[in-house]
Image (cartoon, rainbow, N blue to C red):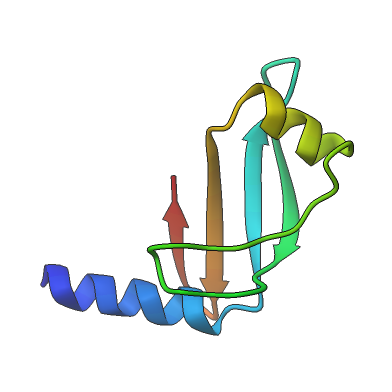
Length: 80
């Protein structure tokens, strides 16, 4: 069952064109933005772009803990 779940999660990530990327902002609140999934490699690595001085980049500098949710039809996978 674990292999099947990992395979399904990889398929969702690899076929999603975007993900919902979340960070904790400077005030301690979650901030989420849609980002393009520019080079999917399953659940092992995900690549996104953001400006280094924008809200998301600034939040990442102070707290590198993130999560991303990928959705495909009625299925989703969240990576923390």
